[in-house]
Length: 432
Image (cartoon, rainbow, N blue to C red):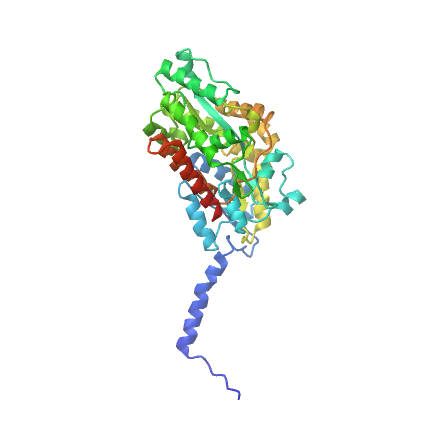
């Protein structure tokens, strides 16, 4: 039996129209960017973290792109590092991620495996994103499951920054690349005795120092999606630094915690509470800006061939963006255009394009920037191959290392107990 159709009651019809109108902007927003207007103009949303100086440089570089491509403008959003990834997670969960967003290796694999980032391999193969002048390790470090998850926006490596002014005033020999870890601790003990300042920040909570030490001992931080070290390795690392604390080569636990918790502008080598800090080499200019003392940077202790060229950070394209081709062109411009390279300098690490890097080194008047570029260039001659990008859960592993190391630093746990705590937490973090 068939039934005749009847017009919808007026109230139901209005409710349906309102619901449709409300749903429309949500559907548009789910594409991560603005619709192209009828005149062909495109607005790309662009999201990054950093201080005001980075914001100004980034905005200048994007303005330069718009000057050369007037049809493309940007909806720019930036904030401090703290809370950035919480906001990015919220946006991606709502299918409203920016067209282009900054990311680092703490989260790159996680976002790539969740299918949030666009695979940029085809743009790379076609030359639309030209990585031919990048160090090979940078591109490898940006690849997750065979897909290029982001464009590396700078090369970096681990650096041990020391206060040259205070050491020379006390007639203490300067630390040198190639010292063993034990030699570095012995040097720090002697330097502390002669200067009255702790010789070295205790890096037992610093994942990058632990990672370099592991590689020098034939291990890795990760083997694929598994941990590449044992609980015994963690215990040996914690015991090494307990010995340094006992020898008074490091600051007291409260000051160590301060160094663990503060940003680069307040690292202990800057505040005068330690003669060395364990940082990323590209942070040298920012460190120098915050102290009148002369700073210098060398490799971490041990075999420097176990350090590697690391991508300091990346920009990824949201897979839901309606303007992937334009977004890819913007990224190619930012990493390969000489004018853009001159604007951006080394704020996000040494420029990935080595020709741009050489131009920045030749043109900059910032002595710390010149020193950093030269240091990474020299270390690069001995770099070994880089590891794979860390698996998802890496950010939690980093925070768990800080927790466990501080238990040992404060004496609330033995190195063995702290190692047990960290190893279990790290395994759980990457197994989720």
